[in-house]
Length: 169
Image (tube, rainbow, N blue to C red; front, side):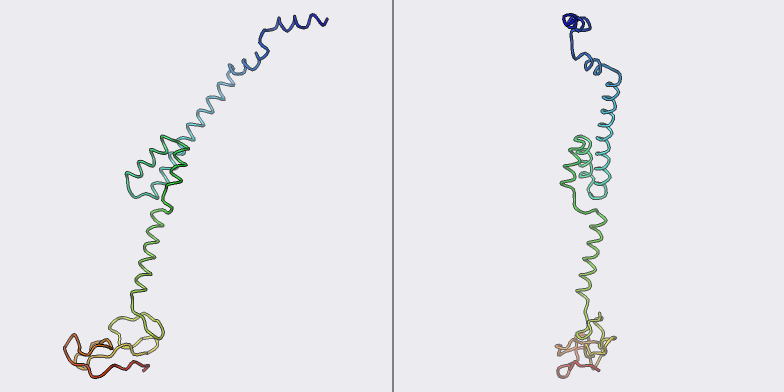
């Protein structure tokens, strides 16, 4: 009996890996390959779409937007990775909000404030409306607000007598 076994194997086929070869030529394998291709194409297009959506929020220049989208479309996931590395760190809306905050802070620094209570005051105020401290003196002739170091009123050319005394009313 031991001599008949090799004859049986030889009779059934010469290739011991015939089952593997049959699997790779089967419709199941072809279906799996087709699904992998569809998945790869979908991933490729999804990467390009994500780059487009993100670049539209971050880039103001149309040419840069086209370059970013083409990078995502041509190079797929690798283009997405490159775009993610070089993209601007903030969106256009965040950049605009930050610039507005800087403008507000700059305007707050520029506006005049009372020396005592730090309340914002206008340049024509003689006294602080909050604490009542004297901010300026008025011209004896035209009654406009004058800075303490002025000796002559720039509006009516009247001389201002003596140094202004700044105290609380």
